[in-house]
Length: 486
Image (cartoon, rainbow, N blue to C red; front, side, top):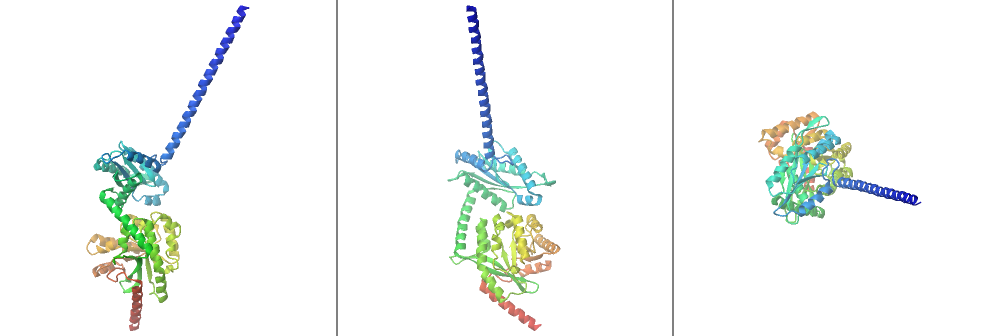
C-alpha cells in the first residue's frame, strides 16, 4: 500500500512539474510575443517618424524635419562656433519641367538628392524644402572659405550631366549662404537670409554662390523699408499713370503710348518705374501696383478713345514683371483691363512673370489675343530662356530693350543681337519694336536693321494724361493738314 501511495505521489509531483514547465514555457512564449509586438510597434513608430520628417522623393529631411534639426543646431551655436545654412536651387528648373515633363523633373530631383547626400562632409545635414529648393546646415562654419568650398562641391556635383527623357542634360545650381547666429537669428530668419543670398546669385546671372554679408543684411533692411513705403504710397494714391508716346519712325506717325507708373513723393521728387521695381521684392506688390495704375488709367483711355485715336493706335501695358502663380488662375490679370476695348491694347510680358505658371499664363494671353489684344515679349534678347518663351507663349511682337539700344552704335555684338532679333521676328511673322531710343544715330541704326516702331526720349518723354490728350489733338491736326496739302 505504501508503495502505491509513493508511486501516486511521484506521479502527481511529476505532473505538477510538467504543468509548471508548461506554464513557464507559456509565459516565455507570451513574453517573446510581447517583445516581438513591441519591436514591430517600435519599428512602425520609427518608420512613421522617418516618413514625417523625410522627403519621399529624395530621402533627405523635409521642411519640418530640417527646421527641427536647424533649431537644435542653432541652439548650440555661438558667435565663436557659428553654423551655416546653404540654400540651393536648380537654375531654370521650371523650364526643364515644361520642356521635358514633370516625370523628368521628378527624376532630376531624385538624382540631385542622391548627389547632395554623396558629397556632404561630416557635420552637414541636407534637406529639401519643396520643389527644387535644397538646404544644408553645417555645424562648423568658423571659416567662410570652408563653407564656400562645400557649396562649390555641391554645385559641381549637381552640374554633372545626366540623362532625362532620353536626352543628355546638364544643369547648374545657384547657392546662397548665411552664417549665424547674429543678433536674434531664428531658424526661419537664417534660412531667409540664405534665400536672400540665393536671389542675389540669381540676379547676378545664376550658376553662382553668394554669401549673406552685413552689407547684404543692411541692403535687405533698406529694401524692406522702401517696399513698405511704396505700398503705403500705392494705397494712398501717390503712384499715378504717365504715358510715353510711341512712333513709327519711318513715317512719323503716332502709333501708341506706354502706360508707366510714377511715384509723386511728398518731397516733390518723382520716382520712375525702374526705381520702383528695385523696391518691390514681393510679386504681390507689383501686382498691386499694376492694378492701381490700370484703375487710374481706365477712365483716361475711355476718354481718349471717345475723342478719337489715330488708326492702329494701342496703349502698351506692362504686366507685372513678376507674378504669383494664382494671378494667372484667379482672373486677376484679366481684371486689369475691365471696361477697356482689348483691340487697343498691347500687353508686354516678361519671362519672370510667367515662370510660376507657364500654362496658365499662356491660356490667359491666348484668350486676350482672341479678344483683340496684342502680346509682346520683353527682354527677348537677354538669353536662351527668354527666347524659348517665343515658342511657348502666344505672341505678336518682340521688343528690343534699352540695354541693347544703348549699346547699338558702340558694340558690334549688340548690333548683331538686334539684327538677329529682327530677322527672327520676320521669320516668325512677328512685329518688332524698340524701347529707350535716345539719339538719332540709334534711331538710324534701328531703321537700317528693319525696326521701325520706336519709343524713347528722342521722340517724347513720359507725360501726364492731359499732355497726351493735347499731343493727340495736335497730331491729328497735323495729319489732317498734311493730307490737305497732298
